Length: 176
Image 1 (tube, rainbow, N blue to C red):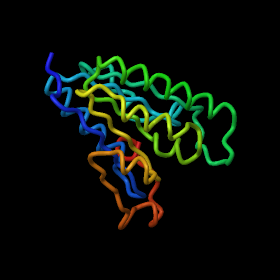
Image 2 (cartoon, rainbow, N blue to C red):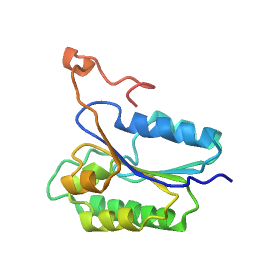
Image 3 (cartoon, one colour):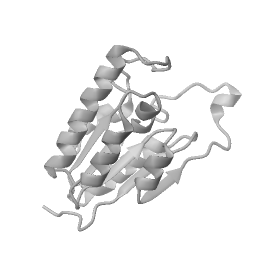
Image 4 (tube, rainbow, N blue to C red):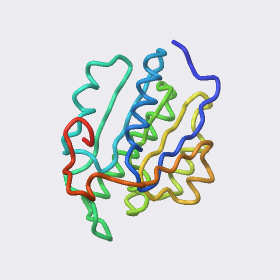
């Protein structure tokens, strides 16, 4: 099985559309080259996203979503949201440290950090101690300065224009 010689840390953040989409594009490219990918979704469990329907059809791709199917907006966050985020992060630590997967995507972890569902020190420690060959991808709005500083690549998606502003609803297969 091929391994990356040097895994980097990538961050997709910003208020524009496409952060998760970019991470899944990377995942698709990686599995196309025989790499193993694990996607862990924070605060997305219980939602009906299109990516959930294709995971079992693609080789070398695992996905686990955590969350209660509601947008987390209250601060401080509820106990259940904290518990689910901690479970997601515990899995992330296990998967990254095992070195079994070449690419690990922590989808919406920046939002979980912003909502204080998990501690930033733990994420920074994971970044610092990841195996050399593991590519680590962190997505979500509100990437902190500490996460940006720790990353090798940071892309900020900036909303310039969005169809929601003209009254279009989210479309199955495109937005979710």
